[in-house]
Amino acid sequence: MSPADEARDLLAQLGVTSSGTLASHSPIDGQQIGSVEEASAAAVAAACDRAQGAFLAWRTVPAPRRGELVRLIGEELRAAKEPLARLVTLEAGKIVQEGLGEVQEMIDICDYAVGLSRQLYGLSISSERASHRMIEQWHPLGPVGVITAFNFPVAVWAWNAALALVCGDPVIWKPSEKTPLCAAAVMALAGRALARFGDAPEGLLQCIQGGRDVGEALVDDPRIALLSATGSTAMGRKVGPRVAQRFGRSLLELGGNNAMIVAPSADLKLAERAILFAAAGTAGQRCTSLRRLIVHESIADGLVSRIRGLFSRISIGDPRESGTLVGPLIDEAAFEGMRRAFPAAERVDAVEGGFYVRPAIVEVDRQEGMVLQETFAPILYILRYKDIGDAIALNNNVVQGLSSAIFTNDLKEAELFQSAAGSDCGIANVNIGTSGAEIGGAFGGEKETGGGRESGSDSWRAYMRRSTNTINYGNDLPLAQGIEFAV
Ligand code: NAD
Image 1 (cartoon, rainbow, N blue to C red):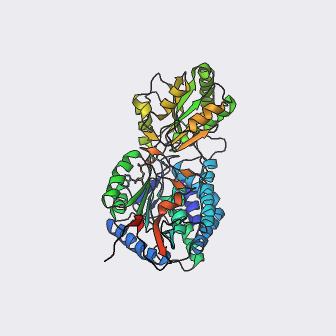
Image 2: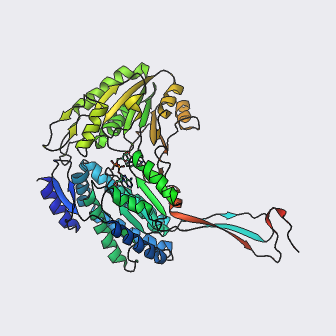
Image 3: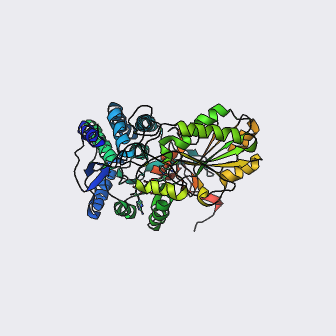
C-alpha cells in the first residue's frame, strides 16, 4: 500500500480529518499524505488567551485529580498504540519498532506523571527564629508552550504535557511543520481523554500548526510562562534570548554531538551492538545518535573493520518492512546536509522519491571541521586514543553536551568517566550506547545543547513555581539575622 493510502486509513482510524494548507509528505516516497490547517498570528494569540483562562481554573484542581486526566490520556495511547506508531513511521520515516517505542515512551511518561501527581513535594526548612516554621510549596506556573522537532513527533509533546498537566499548567503545542499529522492524531486522542474526564477547562490542551513564524508568535507571547523548545541549536539560539527578553522561562533541548569511548577492556560484542543501534538507528536522526567513536588504538583496527562489515550488511529501505533497520532521511535537505559533511555519502536506491543513505564511517586524525558539528544523518567519525585522559578530553571538546558513553570493564575508568572530571554531558552511560534513554531519568544536556531537563527525576520543577513560606506561631516578632528595629 502507498504511504498516502495507508495514511488515509490511519487518520480515519485515529479520528483526524486531513485538510488545510500545510501539507505533510512521507519521507518514505516523498509523496503528500495529508494536510492540516495553519495557525495565523491571531489564532496563536487566541490560543494563548484560552490557555490563560484554562490556567486560572486548572491550577485549583487537586493535583491527583489532574493526574486522572493524564491516566486517561495514557489509556487512549495504549488503545491506539499501533495506528499512532504506524503514523510516526509514515510521517517521520522511523522503522516500525522505533515508532512503537516512541508511543510506548508516551505511555511510560503518562504512568510516571500519574504517580507524580501525588508526589509534588516541597521541603520543610529549619528557621533560625524561635516559634517560626519555614516551608516550600510548589504551585502551578502558567501556560506552557511546547515547540517540537520532527524526529520525535509525538513523544516530546508527551514528556512535556504529562508533567505540565499534573503540575497544573495548560499546554500549547507547536509541532514540527514536517510532522503535522502525528500532532493532529495525538490531539484527537487527547480530545477523547478530555471528553471522558468531563470537566477540564476549555483551552487546556491546544495545538497550533505551522512553521517558524507560528513558533515565534508563541515564543513572544507574555502569557507563556514556560517555553519548552526541542530542536536545533540554531533554533535555541534564537528562542532562548527572545524568551529571556520578556523574563519568561525557557527549557531548551537542542542538538548533540555524542561520543562513545571504547576502552581496551571493553566487551566488544556488546559495544558493536550498541554502536550499530546508536549510530545507524533512526538513520542517525536522534539528538542522542552516536556521532564520534573514540577507540583505543590497540583495538581500533579490528573494531572498525567489524563495524564496517555491520554497516555494509544493514538493511536499508521502506521502514514499514520487517527486517529494515534504517529508513529514509526526513527530506532532501537532510541528504544535502549529509553530502556537505561527507561528499562520498552513498544514496541507496530503496523507494523512489525517498532519500535513503548507507550509514557512513569516516576515520579522522583530528577532531576538527565537520566533526565538531551535528550533521543530522548517519555519519560516524572514528578517532583513536592512547590515554583515557585524552579520550575524555576528546569527548568534551565540542560545543554540544548531550549524551556520552564508555565501554569498559575497568572500574576506575568507568568511575572517572562519570566523575566531575569525566564526561561533561547531561547523559554519561557505561556499557550502553548514547541513545535510547528511559523516561525515569532527567533528560537533557549542557553547553549548546541548552541546559534543559525533561522527563523524570525532579524535572517537574521546571513546570512549577516555588513559594517559600515563613510562618510565625509565637508572640514575638524576631527579625532574621538578629536585626533590631523598633521605636
Ligand atoms: P529545527 O530546529 O529545525 O525545528 C524544531 C522546531 O523549532 C520546529 O517546530 C520549528 O518549526 C521550530 N522553530 C525553528 N526556528 C524557530 C524560531 N526561530 N522560533 C520558534 N520556533 C522555531 O529542528 P528539527 O530539524 O526539526 O530537529 C532536529 C534537531 O532537533 C537536531 O538538532 C536534534 O539534535 C534536535 N533535537 C534535540 C532533542 C533534545 O532533546 N535535545 C530531541 C530531539 C531533537
